[in-house]
Image (cartoon, helix red, strand yellow):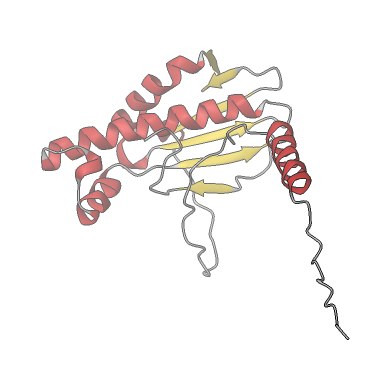
Length: 184
């Protein structure tokens, strides 16, 4: 008597269709996802002070008020200006007033974010240029190529001082940080 052994075949999965579906899902997500570059400001906020904060008074001669109106106009110290004039005006103002300068940015809630970012970028670019000039005077080098100690000294000589105010409320943020928002 002979015994026949049955050969059991393991069923195979057809993975071709699985690969096709995976590839189609990948293409679907690539096509439907938003690939826009996010806009933002590169800022490093000053460390939080645990001490009781006291109000300080600022001389009007050392403060430049920048207002962003609801109809997206920029007003500097009561006079309308174009956004492309802000950088030069900011540089002149900082050179004239020195370390005690202050930019007060007052944005209406209806003002566009785009205008707000443009103002911040123009101010950051002005500070970048001023810090480069200061580093050239002190160290005969560009600001980017200085050591950290040298950069700190330049930041002391040319501090970034921006206070923001919203809709006529009290000042909410005084940014004396060292970082800027312009392309560096």
